Image (cartoon, rainbow, N blue to C red; front, side, top):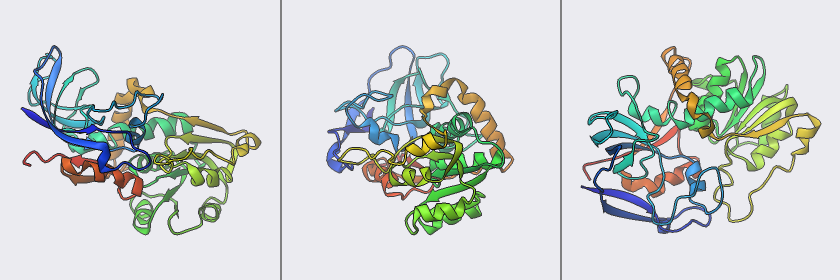
Length: 335
């Protein structure tokens, strides 16, 4: 059996291009001990993938040149040498950008398509949902009545962060790009206010939407927006640094916060989060969020693009702000 795969051909300088990828067909190896062969059905596309392409020290080793591009996915087990997995099981794992994979079962877990659509295990019930859950609750520590601001608010993490903050009794303001996304945050997700960074002066709009200041800021964007929010923070504010998508394709140095002294003046703190730090508690978070979904308190939205071959351009949707909810590729096995 052969697998179609996207290999990292070269390290991007700035925005990734088609030249950074090799699209190949590779013969799958025979299974070793405690391995499974998986038919990959959905592939998760996440902003963190851009960082994984860069050489250098980070929280996870970079993808090597010539290696299959790292990505989470869900799929169906075709063969197994691990007694805990059987053909027909649906599973989540780090299969990569490929349509079939042979992989060790370490880090792979079963998912139930009867409880939720498979693509949801890459969104609210996957890494973005876990990032949102632990980032806002453990690091942001919102209290009822506080004002929570989230950037990248219409994305996979931001939508969940805002809704969890609402569940906890906070006033929530989202920063997003474009009228459609802003309308969705208000009308469907119940945010209290929005800032359209594409069509308004962010600093001015923040003052209008947050008249009592900002107690918690969950940042997915970095850059100028982080600076603008820092001018509005309250005493003992918490700034959760989840990502900085505005900076990932820079060809110059990353822009750090020029307004960081507001942290001193307000005795505030800024703390980074990495979702893998909470892996032992994923089950607890998934159970609570599943309950919120069942009760109608948490709405999940996936943006599904069909076709493995679309990967290079679909990935760029994240950096152009074109995805609406969790961005996922549905693998077409007929091509």
